[in-house]
Length: 567
Image (cartoon, rainbow, N blue to C red; front, side, top):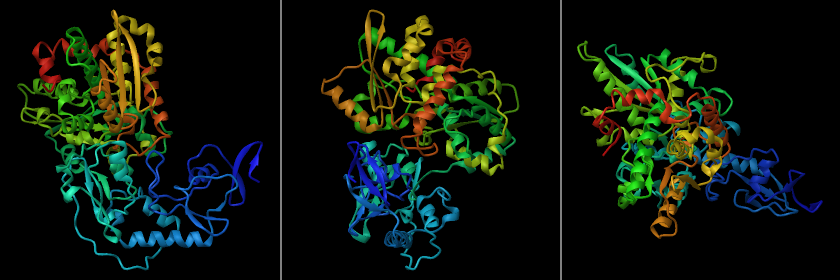
């Protein structure tokens, strides 16, 4: 049976399954409800076919990798024969023979694809001698750690770094059994062109590349009676943390996060969206100033530290086009430190440490940059990821799903919906459009959302009216997409006034510090952000009474530029 009602079919384990444009057999198999194991296949990346876990058996006994074989009408395959089971177990044993087995202390324990498949296929013993394991870990990066002893040569990190992020900081070296994934000339990763986006760690199926854990110094500060620990929570964290605790994907758990942080000993808890409101005001005013002068356009956003580092390394000629605004995290951190400094006058001195809870690994790099210092110390003492926060909650023994939500602290307890949507691609642009439209924005919020700012395309183009002209805006996520756009701008093929860049595809909701997703979970998370915007009483950053108060007090005169801009 090749066709039915002019549809194409293939036979999988004796059952007909329609072929509906799938690029490989694997996608058809998964559509049929069969969870075929893979270690090196992700639909967003090129097909590599290295792990061979997805092999299937053809009608004539031929073995083929389902990820790299296109489907054909009439094809008959089997996915679970004794021969295939033997092959898969043998592949796993060979991988484990060349793999560090310190599973209980590994950062990826219980989240490791190799461990998961070993348990799934009932591997209780490895018949092969373990290869020599040496201590070649690379912890030079502030964002990630590399342990080649846990690498299975799946190539996921290599393809992510080159195909999606256009960085190429890591690649394959040597051949055969000596093949490894490494940097050029085995340099420490911190000395390469790595931008600290962490997407290699997010996609790594084992513990070969992991996000750097910075929790112990934070615990030490929380237990220090002479230290005031202040937390700020990035917008994207609230719609992703719940994934780790069985809460429906995309649910806004901001109130639960606030409550959990207080139980763990944080003295004050705020929303980084308040800092995003400051960023909107400062960045929009910078845009208006450049438009009036007709200089240094387009204005590129500066919120994303991985993008900023990419531009520094690859396009120094663009640095004058990048906004002078600090990121929302650094802006808000400066405000919190300045307020603490004023409050400590005449009192017994205490140390105030600002902690940023971020979806992003590049923030770990950003906090150490020279321009983000306050009185000679980093403005942000600790930057931890969403996943690190989940680990803290578990370590503290808190049942997150049962925690009752609480509100953030005053006097910075209000953020606009425009500040919240910063966490999704297009959110910065939408917030800036609302600001430059002024009073008219309130009546046209729905219209603004349909201008093209929303969605997950790698490149979005928007035109919005501004005074007697139109603003040409580009929104790009993923550094490869950003590079393509830059090349088009420099070739004179396109012209923009404003360009939003996020290093991670989909924006901060898909940051490397979040529970890992590639593709299907992004719409649920973005909907959680937009729902928070809809439920907000304040829609425009310019109407946030907290920012009004700050500009009338802490940010008077030159203080605004000094605290909110890096140059």
